[in-house]
Length: 222
Image 1 (tube, rainbow, N blue to C red):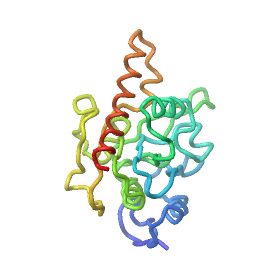
Image 2 (image 1 turned 60 degrees about the vertical axis):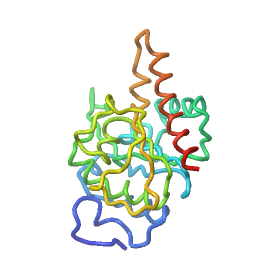
Image 3 (image 1 turned 30 degrees about the vertical axis):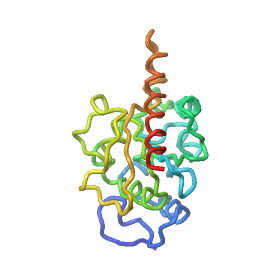
């Protein structure tokens, strides 16, 4: 049963019961924006309530859309390696995306090419992310890329100027959680994967350092 019937975006699909299973089931029928029309399925978050670290990406990619799980493609494998190098136990992590459906264009009639979700789609989907935060109750949220960061920190936020810094949720984001989580913004692992320059090792190391900063924030809170 949804909490409201006339709320904007995804909000009208939120269930009255708020645990991860109920949220996941309700999200399967979400028509809060038009992305559900072409996506294979809703890709909800993965992990356990009480995970101290939440990783938030942009949206599911092609492989995630087919599998129904976040971060199972090449960028997800790079992320798993980076978490290991940062000393973060995967069991401590809940993974999700700011947008729960795959947005794409077709090339050659078959190949599906990732298309960045628009602001309207990000805002429409945000109630799912906020509900996940309230259920999981993470101590640290790592925002992977501009779309994820701007979904919580506003459209003016720039990862390039504040990456790796420890931030707080703005007052405009209505999250009922005490204490509030620490936020750390960094690049999306797909951007590290795409980097073919002679600086690739440095780009990867900086990404790992950002994840390590998130782990350090967790240690200070503990």
